Length: 156
Length: 354
Ligand code: SF4
Image 1 (spheres, helix red, strand yellow):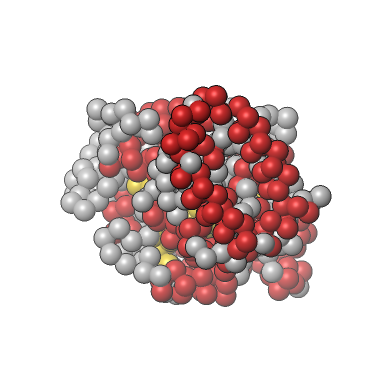
Image 2 (image 1 turned 135 degrees about the vertical axis):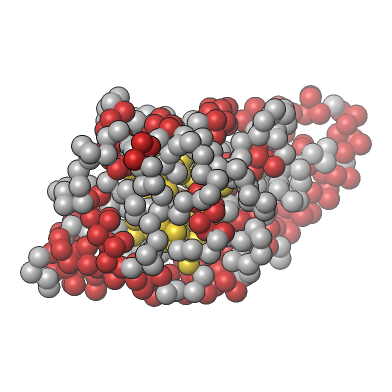
């Protein structure tokens, strides 16, 4: 269990570059996407995102992807949905307070972030998720410039 | 401390220049005095007298009283209810608010309600998971985390608006607190996390139980180096601690209560004592004295669940108040007395362990 997720964290650097590339591609193709219509794209892109990111990161489709700020470890896998660092209940062996058999996602997040160029992003305070965006595509939001690392969903 | 402008109990103090709240706790901390806080475990009852009795045990020894919010995910009287009862007779309270049970609509409403009742110290917590308590089948909410709750509360205070952006006519004047646990993994990240809490709006910190002052010293040094303890919006760190009832209960806590780190040498010390309960109290006093000397520490938070009667003695023997007698109802004016003070269990009373 959790093997692919841990693989992603171990290769956080590669994924960071992949994601940076994806961001550029998405932003460049914005005019094209716009012409096709974001509304029409939403369902298929969200489907793709859900399955790809679900496989790689156990993504929960919160609609506000912060993987680039959390060492490629999805914070929505934390049973408390913490998006700003570990709680005070992390076990001595690194196990999660709520699910002892799972390693605390924030230990993974820290390790992943240390492998990344923008390790400092983990220090940014993240605002709460917008629950109405659950299940929607983060990638399309990136294309629209609504979201992304350093985006509007952080305290600055 | 009694201030010259102390009003009728239950009404807030004037907010001093440079202060953010009308509370006594902020005044004591900003005056540079070593502050002492403690906590009340809210009753499983709707009787206000029980709350007032539980508070009176600490009269003359503490600067503020925390009202826990479903601690350990067990159901008790709400923290806002406890705080309202206490502020009515003049006690300074710290309203604990956990993100486990409510969404942002409920929490912001409660912040306003609490502030209107004079509960001007707010401790923003994530909360234990529901699996730990008496209602493991409840739905965990966690709409916010402690960091975003802090940030929202600060926005309510400084920008007079809700998270939605809608305005607040008369903003709550809050002294904002957060918790930290320097004693559990990832230890090397805990200071950095404190910086994040300060950035999100924390004015004071209460830590988890400290049984390991050496770790705390390293943590405080790191926090000091990061510059978090300087300037007008510096952090005030109050270190958590409490008496252990016996070596057996210490072991039990270590194995069952998430986030409490008890080193082996502490358990050995208890085992070696003839009267383990007494040794547990002495150990807490020793830790308090040791923590008092650590650079950058602003105060102590004493949590003595079911041993509340020991708190006064621990503080008295440690000498950390340096002769100061924190204000309590009736200290200067017998007419202001807590109506349940006479029936409160005196310092001699002790509970039966954890
Ligand atoms: S231990 Fe880690 S993963 Fe588990 S609840 Fe706490 S922060 Fe979340």
